[in-house]
Length: 517
Image (cartoon, rainbow, N blue to C red):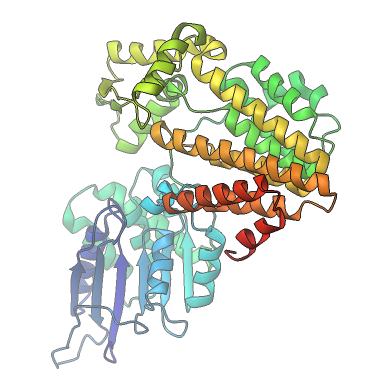
């Protein structure tokens, strides 16, 4: 435990956020201000499975003559300051017991850099921001939290400089503001930009209190398409829609037009129309139908990679200024993705042959394309222009056919029971991913759709409600979204339930659902 007269500070760093430089600034500033200070680092593992942490201890009495006993490691419950460059790191340190409501000041950025687990989860694996917010407020003695990444990007500076200013502004350390500035200047690297970030963090910490500002997650390129341009075109279709459905539809239409064209967006509206009588079912269908109709293919990838906004963002993030930048895209499409953009009638025989020849995975074609060269850009740009062929492509034939079967099953279930229809509609969440992953999940989707239909038909004949089929469909979906192990359990559940349905033992399915929940 930290001795009296010592202040302890922990930085749980994320790769690329400058945690090492941040800790060096703090140690240098304390020394310049006349304090005895010690800093150490604890190496972790890459890819966010265990981040490197930096630990600093500072003697608050400048006149103390006794040599202090510095610790190399933080002690749970005895931490004075937690300085976190990313919001999930706050939760991780709280879970480890370092943060104390009676002692710890938490200074952090609220932006998120998703972990490998969050990115690879079959279902929604993102840790809820609201829980992190509530946890931080309940556990910290004082909380200074804001989106340091957004502020840093706006000013062309770094997150660690902004957080250093926030630390100075919080008053959690006895080090003077000028000492922090001198520490930045002493390194002689990007001094002007870092001082600008420091001043911004300093002012933000003094005015933000304990407010936790929301921020957008860091992810792939997205292009925001204004919906106002399409309001006149589709205004007649939006009249009379319930608010919950209309909100989704307005958001989806502009993106569907960007993905394909206005006719494609009207097809979405036509498909959705028969489900709008039930607001509960319609809202679920509206969301998942829009997502599915904008499935990712090679054409969509090419569209994203050739947008001017993408190159502008890269230039901004790298701070290249007027310098020449070079962007190399690493692509590895498999055979299905290559001929998936070609006309269905042309490639159907080859696609069926490839499915028989390589049932467990298609060969891939790796390539490196420099999209900042004329030839490389034209290759990808011409691929994006194949959008006009998408409606007659092999991939569209498969996706649109499966969408129609899903919608027919939802409509059938809606005639029986609203709850069952919602669960069938939610099965569309299983259709995601690329290559082998998508093929595996699509097969499970087909299994779940057939299972829901069989169970619903069995219960409809008994006229005793649809509790079993609804619970069975929900359980199947939940298992699949748990990941590979859950997929195996879902397949076993479907096999056992189908066998009991075939034997006419509908009630025998109930234990399969209730004993595992």
